[in-house]
Length: 217
Ligand code: DX5
Ligand code: ZN
Image 1 (tube, rainbow, N blue to C red):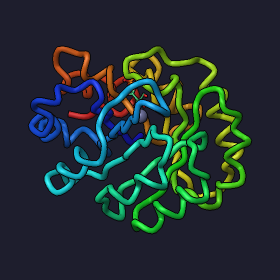
Image 2: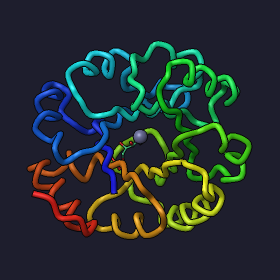
Image 3: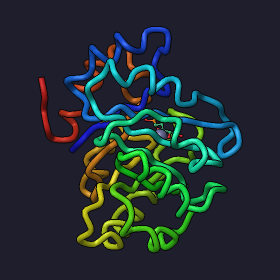
Image 4: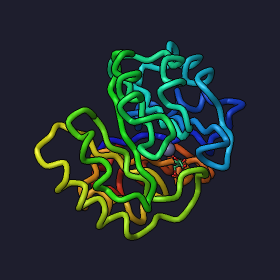
């Protein structure tokens, strides 16, 4: 298991020190970029990941919930190991978003909403490094995991076949279901509320690794 820590529910007034304190228990930092159009919520644009980029060694997993991913992608300062993820349902044609992200020299990810048929991914699977399956409706942290996501994940696994694509799952994951998500084929779990709604985020991360069957200390 790789763990991508979603900062959406973190205390932004002390974000850097929080991330430094948790970095050894995390594989990626997940940034939820929301434009108020693609989803009914506003978060932050490139300024936040860009300002943290030189201060944190971990790779960034940047989840673009925006209508115009091709237009905004070039504004992110990324490293080759970072992943810039856009939604197949966005307004910009996926081909344009793919090309814009590849131009940056980082990895490219494709995401889809819980009700979007997996088949829409098929034409792009040879072009992407990462697929992010949403297990909640995008827009807000702290929602309940949609149980049908497990079957979707198994189906996605079959669809991806032997292609070198990392499968990530985002939304409603915590100690109660992390094992099921891994068993269904996830390699990366994105976790936010289960860590940042806890009184001790570090303890919550240790608990999550334990629940996943990979105890850490
Ligand atoms: C939802 C976001 C998620 C969210 C993570 O639109 O994409 O990344 O913060 O889910 P929770 O908070 O449920 O772990
Ligand atoms: Zn996300």
